[in-house]
Length: 151
Image 1 (tube, rainbow, N blue to C red):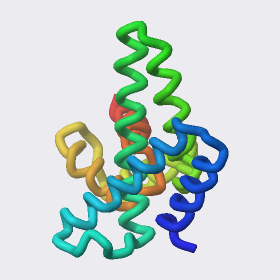
Image 2 (cartoon, rainbow, N blue to C red):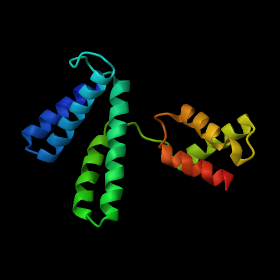
Image 3 (cartoon, helix red, strand yellow):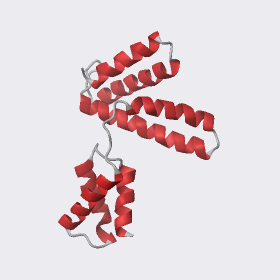
């Protein structure tokens, strides 16, 4: 069963349970899938591959994280809580991301492999690390680890 089919099933289950927040979240995700397919100049009824679905879900999860931060900073904890619930629904479909320790090991090994010693090549280095860890690690966490190594 593809991710798109799993999300459709979750949406149906949420409809039966009358969980409107879940229904709205899953409908928005299905809409984002269609938008992604159309953006790639394909027919709107083209099935979404799991890779495309993960890209869309990751993007939507990132939006939720940004919203949570903004709402929390503005003192709107009620809205932040709604976003946290939606984020939890989306994270069910994302692969487990690497821990800080795992990222640190890979970043250290990559640093030695590339022979980088100073900050002048930091951008190129982060690009190389993210290319290797794409989809396996949170970009903000990778940046934090790299900053820690160069500090």
